[in-house]
Amino acid sequence: MNADANSGREDLIARMLGPTGPELTCDECFAQLDRYVDLEAAGADADAAISGLRAHLEGCPACREDHESLLEYVRSERTD
Ligand SMILES: [Zn+2]
Image (cartoon, rainbow, N blue to C red):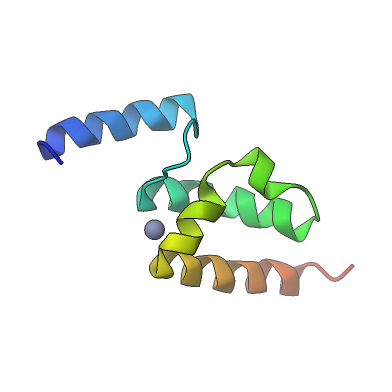
């Protein structure tokens, strides 16, 4: 809500620390999405591994669409 420079800095710190809270930005969501979908497709607990991403997907149609197409792609690549 403040200056862009400030939120950019917080974003950088968040990237360095990894996901810590329930709220992800779209950038953070996008950065984690590959790993999330890999875990999901493998039947692992993706929600536990990357906390907050599922909540973000539920509240963000754009990322949800990305997630769905990526999941579809990863599942089509996995033939087991
Ligand atoms: Zn988003």
